[in-house]
Image 1 (cartoon, one colour):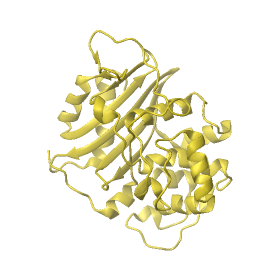
Image 2 (cartoon, one colour):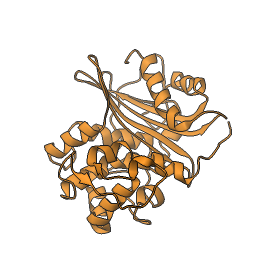
Image 3 (cartoon, one colour):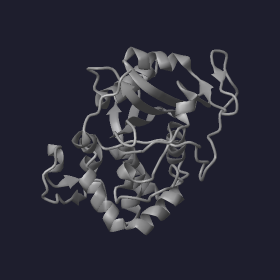
Amino acid sequence: MRRFGLGFCAVLAAACGSAQVSPPASPAGAAPTVSAAGPSVATAPGTGIRELSELAKELEAERVGGTIALFDSKDGVLGCSDVALCQEAVIPASTFKIPHSMIALEAGIVEGPDSVLAWDHQTYSNDEWNQDLKFRDAFRSSCVPCYRAIAQKVGPAAEHDWVEKLGYGNRDTSGDVVFWLRGGLRISPVAQIDFLRRFDADKLPISSRTADIVRDIMTVDVTENYVLRGKTGSAEEPGEAYWFVGWLELGERRVFFATLLTSYAPGIDPLKARRTVTERVLRSRGLL
């Protein structure tokens, strides 16, 4: 399967994504807990992660390459379509807007979801960014200049301290001010799920108000049967990474997911495919 770049403007318009080699422990650096193996899947030696070959078939059906990691609270199983890739660290891109939104709220840079982030009056390829935006809309449109301004106000030392406290990825905030796009920060699909599980379980060092606001702005879809929360991200350098991470709420049950696309066939738009293939997997398991 060939790779076809989208150009830097498309990267900004979609806001980036990433992964990490060793899953950070809850809450600092250990791998998530998983249950005993089930009858239809094998556990990859030394990882505690089940290889779910049926997920790979869903990726193939959408003509994309990469991996999907899932953790279902119903059975406590952590599974991946590609166990090795699920543990590989890549740039988080705009999936970092989940913890970054927590930082913005905790640091007092943003008061709430309706706080207005001022447009810097530069013209961007994404028309949604060329205006003042409410915080929730900046999150949902992956407004890179908005979060760059937040990072500048927080400051590099405080950003690093917060990433350490949150136990996010490899904790490396070196490089560009937008270090989640062009710096040293890396995270894996497995580590994405670990972070999201700690978030949902209220095991992060943030207030309940901050947690509620971030959950709210992460809401993608609400029906009578479920709530879908998530965040996309995309990057082309130092390697293509198209993310969709989040979780599905089914009453008390949670199904966490981290989809990472690294290649795609001609004619496929990875910005759309990352969510499409995730929802295809959830439907195939009778969850949507």
